[in-house]
Length: 272
Ligand SMILES: Nc1ncnc2c1ncn2[C@@H]1O[C@H](COP(=O)(O)OP(=O)(O)OP(=O)(O)O)[C@@H](O)[C@H]1O
Ligand SMILES: [Mg+2]
Image (tube, rainbow, N blue to C red; front, side, top):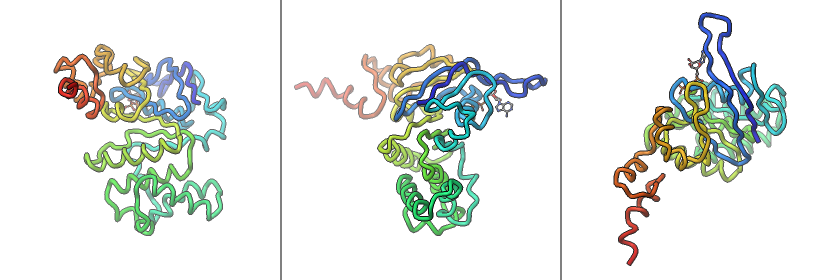
């Protein structure tokens, strides 16, 4: 479990560029949950996840992972973080050595490393023969998968994804999401997903934390969030198009996905 309590953070304190990025943030992330972090650009999402991963030093408040403070070096093995556009950080000569880089640093045996590389490649839908390719011979979507596999190979208990599908075309995005979330959810990893995309949040998240100007505006399920028009407006967010469409049709029932919308719309015809 992750417990974030009264966290505030200011960049460049005491300079003319001082900027408060987070104010009194408190929330929990339960084991096995997919928690989405939503909010307008500059609302503090990336700052918050870097604090949770121990990459930005806490100055106010506390963050605990499984009872350990984020300051504790032991948490490094618990958390895997995938930054926006992670493929820009690939640097090894082959796909295989790139994915193996982290596990090697953990000092694992060669067999264990190779087993983890295989498993991670399977999880992100990369075929075996790509192992000996250079990451630079791959498409953008495939490179993204390699970067993700490198983090999955560390087998983190908590996985933090910052906009994992940003910049991919619709098909690549859809496939990546299905594969990642299908595989990851089965393995029971706890996920924090930073996303601007309300459809993705509707489909994959159990709960959402909405940030606006460094403060928490809302914590609850996607369904609860999409019924709160004022909160959405204040955060500069919109419900998924399908949710908006059903609202416009005045059907009195909320749909988060296409499947749900179909059932609601066809209900009058299915009765007899
Ligand atoms: N290294 C930094 N130095 C100074 N200010 C920063 C730094 N990083 C972020 N900020 C400021 O802190 C605030 C929160 O930024 P943050 O990157 O956490 O937002 P975000 O929600 O991730 O935005 P986006 O959706 O654009 O990624 C912004 O006002 C930003 O300008
Ligand atoms: Mg960000």
